[in-house]
Image 1 (tube, protein in one colour):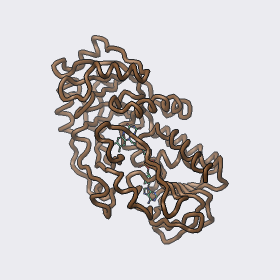
Image 2 (cartoon, rainbow, N blue to C red):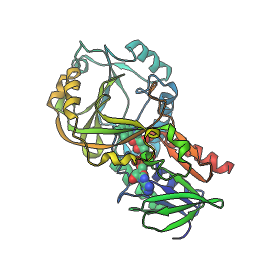
Image 3 (cartoon, protein in one colour):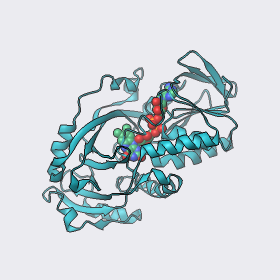
Image 4 (cartoon, helix red, strand yellow):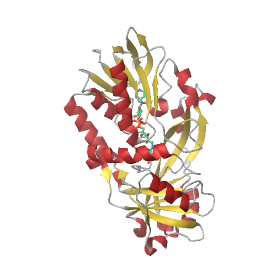
Length: 366
Ligand SMILES: Cc1cc2nc3c(=O)[nH]c(=O)nc-3n(C[C@H](O)[C@H](O)[C@H](O)COP(=O)(O)OP(=O)(O)OC[C@H]3O[C@@H](n4cnc5c(N)ncnc54)[C@H](O)[C@@H]3O)c2cc1C
């Protein structure tokens, strides 16, 4: 295989966006993906929330960056943004880490609009359990539309894409990086960008540096048909062991996720360095939809009419140490033995623009 100037490993949202971006600078950019399609993993299996800050009342930085990145996202991916619903945020009376006054002060601090919900919207919530309800502006993304856009842009910009190709080994090779594939072939690339999310540590030679920094969860996203009263609504109950029911635009359904039941298990990578995180997906666990629903309908009785269509499962990978404030920092790591090997954990879709800026700075300094 001819040598690329830059190789991107992982055809999720991050890998595809980065490959297109790298074509401005490099003659030959190759993207390899182990699955037989693009954006099939975490970039698809999620809440599809295009964050506008409201979700992070305990991390000002994450909230503020989300707000400015949302505007860029709208400009760069207009067809991938789904706005055709109203989004309600509710504050639970008990067990919430923020009260409504805190939430209002925080929204003012990040410059986010917060409107008290009207009587009809408030009536959807059990007043015994919910102290305040607000209407906010927070869209969803449509992963199928994003996939179409990215596939088209990669073709236009001349990114070479190979699916069903798994990288199994990386190592320093002169100034570049040697890459080994599962089929026994290999190549040498000028730069390698490891965008494999949950599998970030599986191929890097100096994984020992990255391991202590990752925590994985086996996550379930239940897809439901929302009852008519909730069909044009997204609902997020804050800020603790509660739930969200949001449009899942790529399938014309809603997702139901619950802070207590969506993570089936959680483990720090350092506790099981030899285990491939993806192994927990085989076999898949039984759904916890019934538990999610049992709790969620106490807060929003109309949810009772939802129909569970199926559940999606995948690994959610977080930077360790963020469990307290729920922040979503980017992990950007240059390998000690192969400095032109960069590993990136984006944490949420809108962080991509900050990642692209950091990649530019890194390449300019190199
Ligand atoms: C349950 C859940 C809910 C979430 N909710 C939201 C949300 O509402 N909003 C938000 O913005 N973010 C959310 N996130 C986070 C968001 O989904 C991720 O930050 C984002 O999708 C990461 O994109 P990625 O391209 O890095 O990863 P992925 O989409 O997982 O792509 C990584 C790719 O690498 C490939 N790969 C792995 N190993 C190899 C290898 N050795 N060789 C070749 N290819 C390989 C994989 O097959 C995969 O396609 C959520 C995540 C989860 C799991």
